[in-house]
Structures are given as C-alpha cells and as structure tokens.
Image (cartoon, rainbow, N blue to C red; front, side):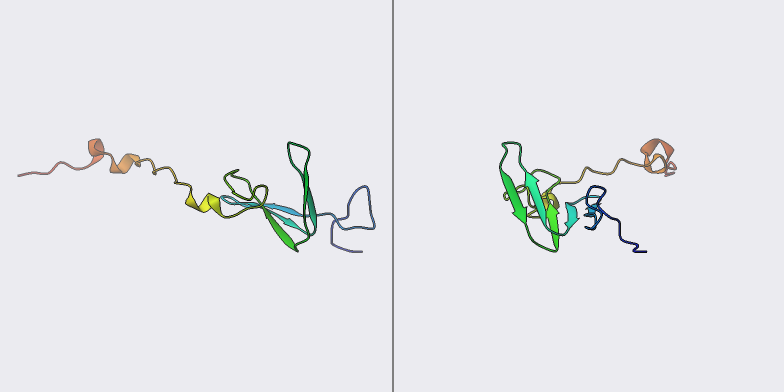
Length: 91
C-alpha cells in the first residue's frame, strides 16, 4: 500500500501537499491553479510553488520574498530586565 495520500475525489491521483511556513509563503507541491478574487485563473507548473501569504508580493499570488523586508516587532522586555527589578547601584 502506498504511503502517499490520495485525492479523495480522484483516488488514482496523489493529493497535493500545502506546507505552511512560519514567516513566509505557502509551499504547494505539484502543478497548481489559483483562482484570484476577480475570477482570473493563474497556473504554475513548477514542482514546488511558493504562494504569497503576506499579500505584499509584486507578482501576487506568487511569492517574491517581500515578506523578508517586513519589519519584525521589537521584543518586549522580560520582567528580569526591567529597571524596577534590577539591583540598585551603590556609590
């Protein structure tokens, strides 16, 4: 028996896999058709397609790595590094 998942409506075809990355695009294995909000359909025949998740791509729906230029929020100070909990200096 094959360990590859199968498409529920077409058991003779393997299911496509979509990998959600933490801070980047969605990675889709195999050929892909995307239907855009305006009804247009765009197709990728690549073995793995990076689909934009941040919606900043200039070539949307495909990823152009615009997510890398996004500024990350500054880390919040930990309770141990706050001025109130730091030891006082003695003269």
